[in-house]
Image 1 (cartoon, one colour):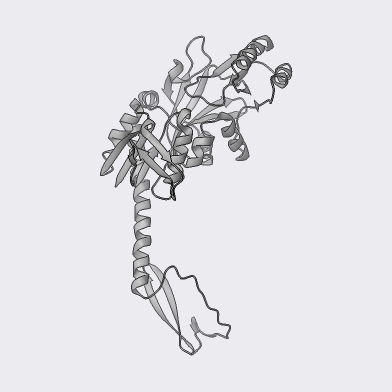
Image 2 (tube, helix red, strand yellow):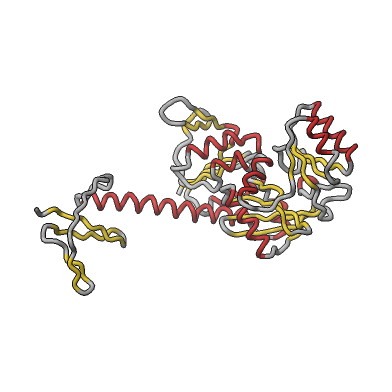
Length: 353
């Protein structure tokens, strides 16, 4: 099998690339910045260094929110050609915190209360009537960047003025007190394969490892695991990091990471996540290859039997059927041939009028 890893070439991606080489016959490392999408012809064409990208059995595409559009275009183009652990729609939804919230809300997945206002004046009125502290954040961003904490109206108002002057969109979210901790659940397929609790550094509200947080392995309860898996499946992600806060009302999802780092959680849990990812990709790609091959073989067998697999024309006979014991006796006008195709029985009715 042939696979491709489309990424920005981070350490986590390099680990995953090396692990994939153990399970695939060949693996191409492709820098997302060297790709382009060509539209306007009969088919969408994906170019890598000005050459067609080619065919693969599996493409694992990942990258920051800055490349969400091209990643969506690439995965949409290859959606019917190979196995993709992250579906095209996820790159639009997962890289925008507001769209993520809307999608998870529809699925009934608990998240902190979030507010979006159309104007600065509306935001000021909202800030005067909500409970503090609060979080103000950009809809797009990663590693905790663009997340601001306000413990009072004057502080929130100052942040609002700065964001307005920069013409930056933002959302307002309730602050969930967890003592500066959060949970990163690493989902692969329908399982949480690793989890860690992250503790923010002193004088810091963000628990992200990139913001100085420290991770420690943790075993999640069944309810929290199911919540993380549901969140990943809602956004059509077979591989992702799900960030969770343990509130007084239970766990709430704060966001999903489509390109989760491996260094921090691997160090904390001692689990080789790169290997687990690679093994899962190979398993899913293999299933898809087998299904595709079975489909081709079945069609070939049908053609050999004189049956056109593309023929959707059917004919109907209305008549009485005689039942003898456990047998159905067909009318004399009809005979049939019986074919076995990979465990399935195919009846071909022959008119004998």
